[in-house]
Image (cartoon, rainbow, N blue to C red; front, top):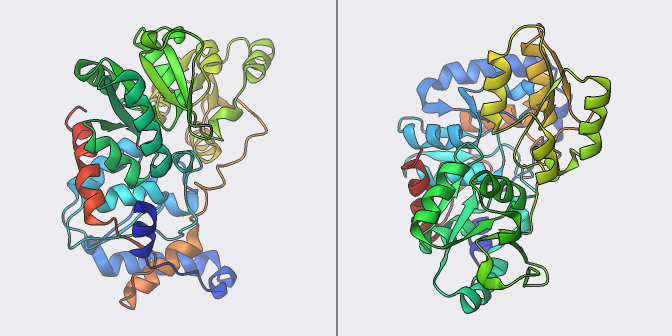
Length: 369
């Protein structure tokens, strides 16, 4: 099994309890010391959804696309300590050289969406879909997916996508095949295909639990097959949230991530990737108002960075993503102090047979951005 292969190649350790009792000041001082000691041998990428306490020490911050590009371009760092989640660290390992070691400070840092598609389910789905549609389907996977899923897509001629380049990648995919299988986030797939002019009634759902196609019409009419997966954070932004903003703050702009449902995206003023959201608010006039539908760590950071604008979460009861939010200052310090001792705890190593096919999918994406 690919997943078992990956897990066997990862050295998993738990952080000692003693790190939880150290003061913030002491930990920050030690992180700065170790970063200075290692210099260019150490590289810390940080995803936008991470906590401020680790983002402040990141050498580069960005969304999934930006961090994938940064990992591919960095050939010098011996150690890459990834402040993100498991699938991002896997991608970094696959795009870096053999002498570079990728570490994930907390192995519990994951993505519930990525976990909604495993390789066994995907293989079963592909077999049935080939029987129904023949050789007319190109698979695409959101980068929020396992290395094994990326390898499946690469082996079958497809590519990875991010929310920043999904439209461009779907256009490319339609130039290759008649139909698209989009994993694992149905909402990003649906919203992007809709923006490209694909009617909703030409989109079907693949249910990996029942292993069947959910579609009422003639299968010949299907153009896009959406894997039945979703982001648990973005699915919590609702039409009622938008109705509340429209009623109480009619002059407020609503901007959301395309992992939100079609109904929410359709009623919003703007929808786009994490970078798109950041850039839109950055460029907005002082005094403008914004309700933002994305992860709470990022929303809070945007609020802090733009005191000249009124910015709120579209859902006032939203909390940070529990799986994206795992890496904290103690785990970062523990990992760095381990490197100082010559230890590489929680190293991510994707087996070569998976890497070869997955890199095909990643490179097809990077060639089209």
